[in-house]
Image 1 (cartoon, rainbow, N blue to C red):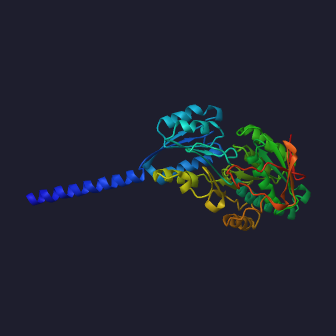
Image 2 (cartoon, rainbow, N blue to C red):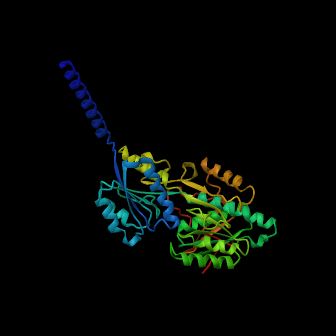
Image 3 (cartoon, one colour):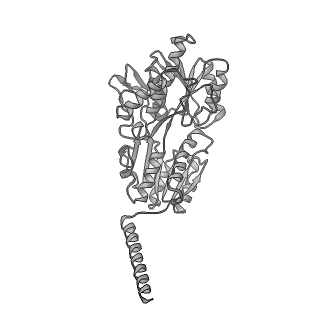
Length: 397
């Protein structure tokens, strides 16, 4: 009987020693078994932009389960986000992700050194001094815009060949929120993708001067359709433009290219394809870094510029969704795949290149010639191309 007791005691001591060893190893390596993660959304999940961003939260829950506690705040306007930001940090969030455009995140970060603040980039961070616990990130959207432009171009080419429209009627419309470089870069890449298939194509851009207004976006889209645009896309947050195209397609040939969220359900007869930024790779990698007590930028795969990161098709940060085979022109998938393969191999300098001259509307003396090309996202995750291509892009007043 004594032998049994002795063996039991020795076994317990060995197990306790193993536990201590594991604990010390985790402690010394900084490993963490549980994280509290905050998400702040500028809208709610009913809007395509926020819905797309929320997919990263869903992926996080699926990947880590009970190892992460997630707290979400929705419909937080940029000028109203200080309170929820402080609240999440005060609750002990190890990391907070924010998809808005407020400078408050960067300003408040030093007050909470134990929290990592990760914000979708909203300005050029190249050379800027930022707190060590402040990070920015964004997928290289121009790549998806260009590829979706190829899909649009293939459809326009088909419409020309079937004599539905003439080459002179190859007009693309774009519903844009604000004349920022992010928006300009996106619609320019989209048009250049179209023109890689239909060199005669031109574009009309109409600004809503708001990120999210269903009625205004829909009305803007309807006006562009009335002016003769046969394919529309957008850089705004609601499904309004897609609905406008779907309604118009009942009386003629009008098609829509989505952004951020597939529109195949709300516009099954007119939706061609959608490009989206995949936020999941960054969010999952950032949380993985904290779990391992490593610097976020040492774990995330992409172009690293200090605490700013971007990537494209090469790292899965850009994705094409729901090519509508009932609507798309034959050969569209192959044409898209060819461009995606180039991007995936790191070739990116063919997008902003050609016999084009761009003008900065805020300073007409500032022009750019694209004969030698322009490389987007070279030093920052925020898009910087802000020139209006002369003769082929018209800005609606």
